[in-house]
View 1 (cartoon, helix red, strand yellow):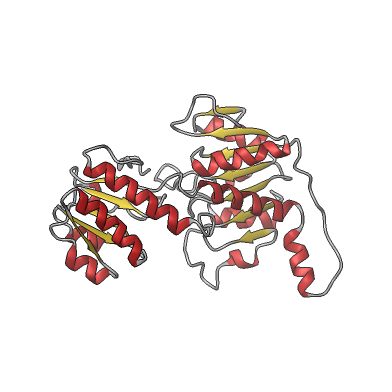
View 2 (tube, helix red, strand yellow):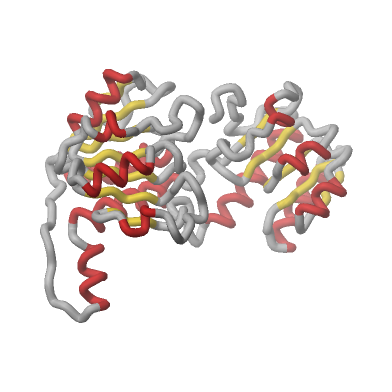
Length: 317
């Protein structure tokens, strides 16, 4: 069996993966760039790391792809979806702690006036604006995967009531007071009940522009909206309008529909909005976590076991 690794691992990390493959009698190759991956992937059964349409199209013998990403909206190409023999694993849950931290960083920056304080610091102005206490308020979570669960866990420190929407998790969960299945009525319930809403669900055809003008109008005018999962779930023109008209109090986006965000995007000048450049999943531990997960899942596959985090290609996550 041929195994191809296409990711920015160190030589030592690649050697460890190669050692695992050798233990099971298989050959592992490393591609440093896309051209090398396209050249080496024909005949490979396994591909670990980065891939695009060109690489997957050339991988005529692929049976298992291990993605470096948790979100799959940009990676489920027709070449993958249409080939039933190809299974895909992602890294869902691997970056959950930092995702929860980032959601809270954005929310607290808004409610505690940090954005204004940083601006005033640059102008050497000793002044502040309104600050909001979150203790005892209600937090709504759209998506109860890793990001959602870690955000909920941290909400307990603020004695918050936590509501959640999720299509597959309906049983009671620690740190979440009430869970409902996504539906227009349940979405309205969550939006109208929450003082802060955090979006942590994947982007799929069902969640694209899930939050548009009608949904934002259902939020409290004092509420905050945070998105740390994928751009495109929030209708950005509708969000800009809601912030400019004071329909909601503020928003924090770590993700945008178009990335990198163009210099002429109106989001840059939108009031009461904080933007971060898709950093919710980042941390000093990310490279190590990805490598350890790849090693573990490769062993599982080579033992004939089902890899962790298999993606439902039809549902998109």
